[in-house]
Image (tube, rainbow, N blue to C red; front, side):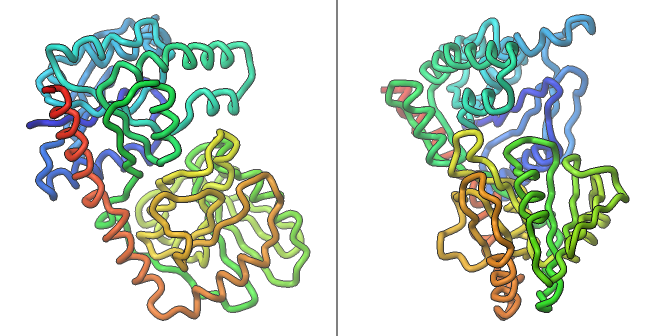
Length: 382
């Protein structure tokens, strides 16, 4: 049996997604799962970090925008994908003139499962209510149901998303929850700076200005702080202000670093006591999530503050602090208490690293794709 994990790139990829796919490719090799990882794109034909970049059918430069309306045709235009038994396709949304183009090929080619990271219509409407986005959401409402009804399997990165997609399909089919993971071996164990009771060091990675990151919620909460203790927040990523700038209000300082990678990123994260993860997924209709940066934080040995329910972190796990899942401006007092508690825990950073290796690593998660593939193939033979 041969399986393919496929992402269609029409110009909207993020660094975190690239890292995740490379981690999945390495995990497949390490665990012996016959899974190849592909990025279908317009320009590249090469293998990088185990990920195979393959070109879809040519699109004239003047029609680049049209590619977003031909997504399933673009995937179907890659002949090598037809040689696999099962294709796991990261769901490209149903804004497509022919949403079933790739699905139709499954009678003589692979079984297909779509991988979902959102309640797509809710997410689109949360981003904007412009006429264009309303049209996109309308297409997703109608065409998305057709896609999930016709594919052979469904993967959600949370139980909530999996159940939503099954309900949208309206028919019984193999489905699994496979949360996002991390390649722990590629993440530096930076640990964290113990809280001294006087200055709290926070770090926050935001690869974009997406509304679900909750950057505005974090900022409002910091601006509302009137306490005597000092708070320093290091902001990293495209969600940050220009690199090298800083803001000061009261006892709070925000330092902006822009995009960082490698040792530069390690140095900044190593200065933190608590890492802030996503704080506003509820804006897209979700309570549960499997955030990539949370997994990186844990692999580094950084205690994490969340604004959602994480699929892999038990409620009583001592190294995560859960904030209310709403728009509230939160008090920093629970963060001070949490920082003091984890700072006094013996070997806290090492405990987090071991947890990441045993629960969050892609080597734990990739075999679950093969388990679902077997169920899908068995069902197709019935």
